[in-house]
Length: 335
Image (cartoon, rainbow, N blue to C red; front, side, top):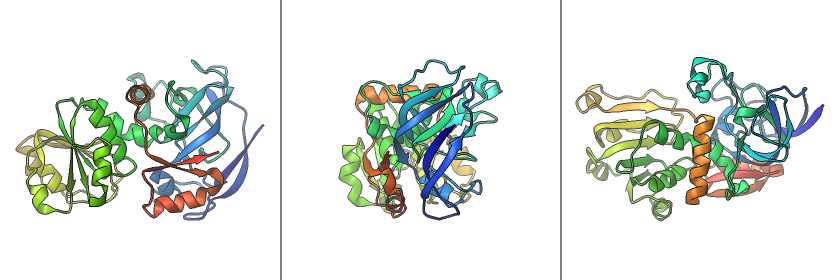
């Protein structure tokens, strides 16, 4: 039996404490990863606090893990002991349901999620099915790669799925953990990129990360001047905004796309969509094939999330730093 040393919360909102548990026998489709680094995502906070009503305790967060394979099941394919891989939000899929057969393993009918009803990567070992252990390409720094496996793929996936073109004018709402990566992806994709932020102090940083324009989202006059400009606007924040301002900024067939986990209903009038055939949509993290494309894209264009590194033993300080809104722009724990 493999003994895992982890950090777990015993109740909603509780600090993480050292926690030891045993992994059962390795299944034929499973791999064990020796964790070197693990990103800290806002979803880890939401799950620790049981904001989504699906957390089991003791709860071990961590779904942006990077490390080396230490054990391989007999059915695992294309992997080898010692290989450096990453693991994101999903840790298993059935491979036989209709979505899986269509290549949409991220929408598997019975998908296993890394920190839902199981223990995640704030630990020295994390387990997953082989299809979700994704090799890191040469040239991608393991220390910064973790956030790509959730935050990164969350904003990269719709670029691919929705057929965003280099000629498109696009907007990114929120220049935080997700938004800063969206700026880098979209600018390297070839798009004209506008950053929407309520923090004017981020303007220089946003432009350094790829934004061609920066708009103060609290400036109603500046927002009104953007009417009909955009083909695509991606929202990366988890709070309610005046969505009609962004709908109005879309041109014909424009799309407002949601990846930020906004819990409140969105108030949008039907006629604001109908007349110019605008749409509102959302998407989850991507399938393994899309994640591999993202990793190759990052290696090719030298795209790296902006990270702050904490020791794994300082996990509670890292979570407090994130909860206070001080992260610039993602946090990584070093084992």
